[in-house]
Image 1 (cartoon, one colour):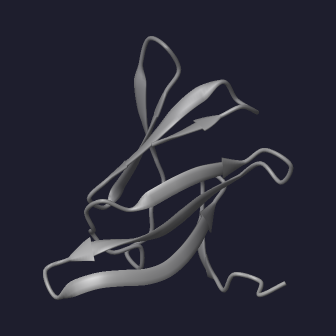
Image 2 (cartoon, rainbow, N blue to C red):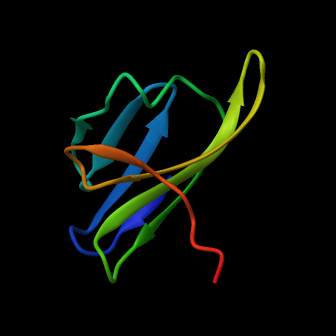
Length: 83
């Protein structure tokens, strides 16, 4: 879960779905098949760039170490900077 300060909503990622809570209603956000079903990922919100950032989690075959960014419409796999 992460709080999107730009839009004033809470974002929840569960299994292979992302949802937004605006205080009264849940709305499903777009997800891509490549953002595989997973449990226990870590998610935050980068307010400077207005992007959700999702890292890792667990699948049946073990832990994941991938990083994704989403804008509520599309998700893109990214490689974190080593700076």
